[in-house]
Length: 607
Ligand code: ADP
Ligand code: ZN
Image (spheres, rainbow, N blue to C red):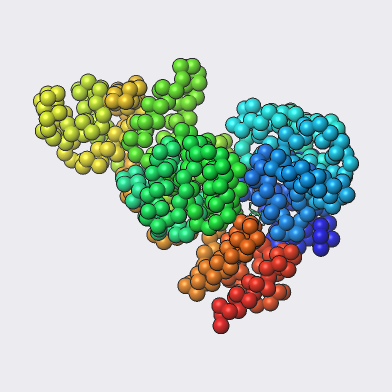
């Protein structure tokens, strides 16, 4: 450490990082690693895993060696650490031989607190000998699920990471990941020989993210409305299924004054890297992306994640929405979907594989996703239960908790719909079926002779929109299924007959409005949004200063101060260095580097 010669973890937390208190299991993990023990941390995104190895690396003699799979992410971490005065560097293929050599020299001379290393580097000839020339404080294996073939980001180079342990058995190790089911976890433990490591597995809840689902009506208008009313000038991700849709939607947003970029596998690597960089380093960019935009977004202030298409399963959905609000600030996860989405996904699933067991797993996962979208219960509870966590009944931070949806007895409506499907021969889609139910005497209906059916016109008690909602819910709950072909229609399932015969009831939900429902900015349970106009203006002023400084230094704004830190600064309005030091997120180094500039800005503002 440069200035502060602190060895106590709390002192490091305060002086280097400017934080008041540890979160959750952080302190426990940190103390164990400092004491030379191994640890395994399975914690959700945003829980603060990085500090769990950064603080021990600073506290222990020598250099902490961090294995991290993503080059872009490594650079960001190093830049952010340097802002806090920590002596961090990285070794990866992006460096010139001269640069790498200089870093290696500093390592051997004991001048580094942390050294980030790409996994392939470890296996290059002579690397272990090089490591042996310095003093190693600890090994941290970030994104440890990459070890496992069962995990979704398998990295062959991770397979052989146990060479570290074999070569340096006395160096403590800490493995960290946010995504690992029990199979993956077991694999990680075996592969890395972490059987004796203390395990820290924390709740996967992300209480600062508000989960909401709405029906797609006019998706572009809905999206724009959402951005304008809830997230003006803020950064977020809009996920779409196809490349073309990403391009179109990004284009649409741009034309309507929301800075947006498309991101998908159809773009060359350079364009993708440049766009990701802009997303991280500028403020308020909306990334319209396919799932190709994923791992390696280490941006803490992503304020919202919108899904314009239904994801295939809850696993992906939860991971994608988890990219919002890593900084713990209130954030939104907003899913828009429609009957067409349900139909498309089911079709995709039917076509996906002929391996029966695989198909069953895919079907089960899709059911869970549809169940989530249609649920009238607490969304968070549903998600966490799905991942095996028990939860209290309400979270008070999802749409269903905040505005409980109305349900109604849908038995008769379901019977009418199912019988219409049956009598028209199980080959038609919702549009025609609804025409028949509403008694619309159009050419298609007449040609098919459906104006003579007993179900013709029996559905006039509901509107077209309401019928659409009925068909969607029937499809989502497996009371109707769709065929494989593009134009094939709804079919009855085994589950349909008991309903037709009146043996089981059906409860349906009244659809929520299509517009985002909460007005103004969303407020979460730990929301400490700014109180008044003056505070908001000061916040914007400080934000502008932050952006200017970040540009001058070629780093991301959040590396200077996080949004939370700025907000704290607005509330305390420090006018002296001593007061500035009380702001959450202002450590010694940042106080020296930026304190006066921000104090000056606050004073000018208050004049
Ligand atoms: P993870 O790697 O688990 O996704 P990070 O390590 O990126 O999470 O931390 C998320 C954010 O929370 C970062 O901005 C980090 O500085 C902040 N943070 C971590 N620990 C604390 C703490 N004890 N107090 C305040 N902020 C913290
Ligand atoms: Zn809830």
